[in-house]
Image (cartoon, rainbow, N blue to C red; front, side, top):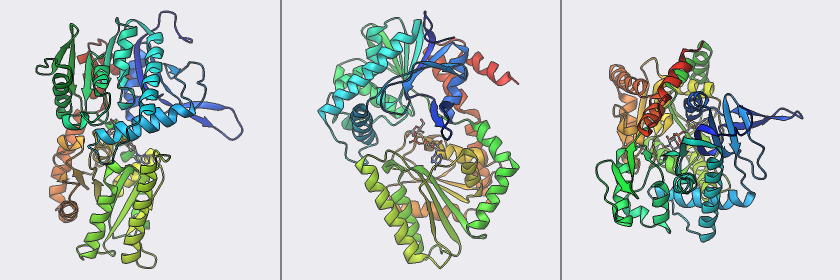
Length: 479
Ligand code: ADQ
């Protein structure tokens, strides 16, 4: 495979970001490295086996580099100007659709120029996909930045099979109705043959809207549009369980976990939060619950420490800057009120960590706090479970995550109710080791059976891609 093959590629993934990061070592030339993460490692074997391509943005504004091949994938960069990044990405995607699809946890902004840019950029992605796809190829489009792509692509290339997967929640009907140009968005998705969601409720919301807004007649898990059938179903995403499990078995990682515990105060119980710094993740609610437990005397700084890791995210958007300030104030307040010299109740780390360090933190934790106000799935919860080969550790998990539907042996809480978060934390801290083992055992069975490979295979099989399964098996069998 060189650059764009004359007859195109049989399998094409379309996502806002390409599966690579640009790295520069000192003054040397830049190069591309495959991005870490379950989605990329799940799709790569399929892409490779099926002579596949990936269409997406490099993450840097300006001209796009020429198409290139890496790790058996053909990459087709789509350019975004600085203005596109402002309007399409930070505007319409992350300040309109993101908050609205997360149940208005923050107020969305509606702007005509953002919508226009969103449409123009979606068209650019659809054209790029149309150019690289072979006759009758399969194209798999991802996520809320590209809701219009399926219909645009179908118009350009009626021969291809189109799948779409939404990684975030799909809102209830009455919230979706608030969106300007709501019909176009729905019609955009209906360009696909298969629309996948994280949960069954999301698929139902979507199908109900086709009746309300477009007077179609959805039935069971499908709806007829222009003589075609569109299927809408849940495909709960997962993680590369084996990768996390292997890291957790590594003696160096286990040693690091012990070291972390000692550094944090030896005998203190460790509460852990790991999130992108996003207002959907319920970080403030978690900090408030922890503060109140200290204030009520239910826990003490001598016995319990909270480590909150927050990855910097979308830092140019005002709501994210304000969130960061509020979180830092809350941490300062708790540490000021309840800290001792040399011993803080909260360790706050505004940084991104490598996989091994993350797994060491999961292993060191007594209680993992996952308290989003709304979350499509939440992979951190699944990573924590995958890391706990010792079948110890407790997971406090918000009912408003997709993960709660599968991990119902967690300590489930209502993240909108501080008292309920407090209850969950205390129950988790006071649970007997036998109870924790039973719960963790169940949750580990669940995620081992339904890992990221299962997810990709299931979606592609329903989409009618033969060979996806074999591709993964062949990949696993390789030495
Ligand atoms: P996100 O909102 O980004 O994903 P999540 O599912 O929790 O949320 O995934 C975050 C990932 O980033 C995890 O793999 C985690 O390990 C990593 N991470 C978090 N903090 C980190 C840190 N400080 N350092 C290094 N890595 C860190 C969106 C949706 C989710 C859905 C996923 C996948 O919002 O609901 O689960 O897509 O579909």
